[in-house]
Image 1 (cartoon, rainbow, N blue to C red):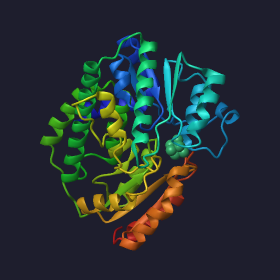
Image 2: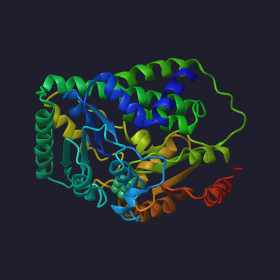
Image 3: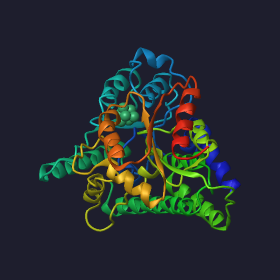
Length: 380
Ligand code: SF4
């Protein structure tokens, strides 16, 4: 298991070097997809490599001249990386600009300062009732496909697209299997290792990642877990668009809690829904986007409650509490949070919210909060 995990750590500890080397090795164009909801399968079918844009582990420097300090961490970090030329190996970039105001700023900033050879702006609609939403979405995806064909010089046939969907679906199934084993044997992987596994899927070609996951699963099946004492099961929720600092995940575990499952973007949300293989593949991708769960506060869904969904997950995992992780200055999550909190209070579910900042100054305050949370649930 160590061999696979060390490969994954190699990929995620320096994604810049990894993706630049990947481009050389495969001789293919790299398309950066700003999270979330970009249908990477269409890029893959055009014989280019989609990678999900990430948050760096460095403080923002030049980026300050382009984005305000009250933008979220990944927004500021991405602009900083872009204007410093750290993402020059990306041949193209794709943004879904309706997601939040901050992503809406990108087209201007990137176009004026570091425009890549290909830049595409998607507008994935909110999921309101009625046919116009789906037909609008289909038109958007068709035009995305056409622009990729234009840039790559490769026609994307339905068969090619279905083949890419199949590879992506396999990746989702394998990741789900990793999650199932962790659910049955919590502690088999550290929480940060699970996040690295999902993150590496966002960076590596899915074919290569599938092979790595198969090897990992073979090793996981054999591994037993020693349960020293009963630990409190908690479900982390939120952290849209970006990885959480690994120190925070370590801290949760060091405080006597254990994570059997999650509802994080760089976690179960990334691979939650597969795409059906029958029928028109663009329509199948549209239908995947239109699935309302796991609920994403950027999709404008009001007839499903995020709190209900998370409580279901809590009960399925026999977990005791929820740790909401809000990316500081993330309006979609912040606006949804009061409703979420009310639901937790109504249902008597222990829940605590912590703010995640790009530049972490001290984790001491967070530690105190998490420690008290664990104590209220009978731990530590
Ligand atoms: S974390 Fe929130 S504010 Fe930041 S890009 Fe994602 S949705 Fe937008």
